[in-house]
Length: 241
Length: 231
Image 1 (cartoon, each protein chain N blue to C red):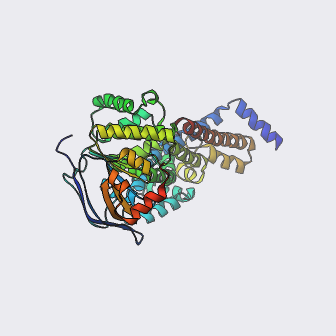
Image 2 (image 1 turned 135 degrees about the vertical axis):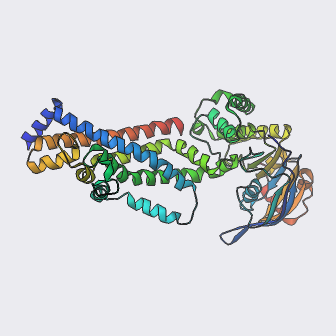
């Protein structure tokens, strides 16, 4: 994968409106390499939309989103996204990962090793031949992570990846996310789960009603929230789940 | 009536050669038509499903409406096209099985295209973000969706086949119902009934119904198995 890093990502006064409703309201921020970033906020705060804007699935209604080095259309993507509900193709787990590599233009002879490696890293090697859509929710989400892993993205967006999973599946997903982080991938994750934010995050972006209210390192955010909304959110979300 | 029925059964059991010939021609014509309609209709349906262009809604409405094309009207149009003075008259295929394949292809092309468009668009709604996130362009997305909806599309194709096998108007007009050349099940049933030869008509009727049921059972089973295997 040629040319240099795509980070940092710069948002300048980005707004997004749909159906006459403002969902993202003039957000400016910069996402740098390194610490994992948690986008925290209540349901409907605009976390998912913000993430889709960053990932390029949505176009901002006004102003700009700039990557340091924009991806060329048609070139392999250097960013990946894992959604709340994984979308699996009607083929084997193995073939789902191989598909992502094919789309990215990886030549066929190289795909096998990459697929096996990434299935291994999420602990799904034994299910490689199984049809992806009949796997459990947790297994499908791990497969979605393997699909992202195979491409060794520079940035990984995660949109509430464990919101519909049970605690043990959630733990497995979280450990894979930590492995991404350890391998040097920039993790940007939306969640409303405070415990998860603490476990996985280095810094918090707190979003409320489409606006960026607060940005702080995790410890500081939880011990001394600067804004009333953040304080109320932390209080309201207890106990830590 | 019961006499006619037992005579019909005797024809079936004895595999009457005239009857076999007619059934085989019917299958040959309708299967060829369905192959052509699928070859053109599936890519067309996929293309409409994943693309956005002005007038798209109108195209979809027209396509859906064309599913109800009256076979006799298709027969008439193809007749005009293929008749000696018509634009394709030089082909000289009027009153041949080729003309019947041509007419039935046109009849069921909208069915295959419209139903596959629907199936693929539903899948596209589910897959779009994921496929775009992976960096798939529209072309490769369309191919992916064609493959991923293959079991729904099989049902679509079989629906087209059922329609082709059961229609009488188009093949009657462009085929001419010539004995031993262009006589198929439906045209024979129409002819023999009007002549009063009920056993052959009845026997063919039973075969036709059996084929339609078998095709639908196959479609149903395939979907069930696929659902269990692939989710």
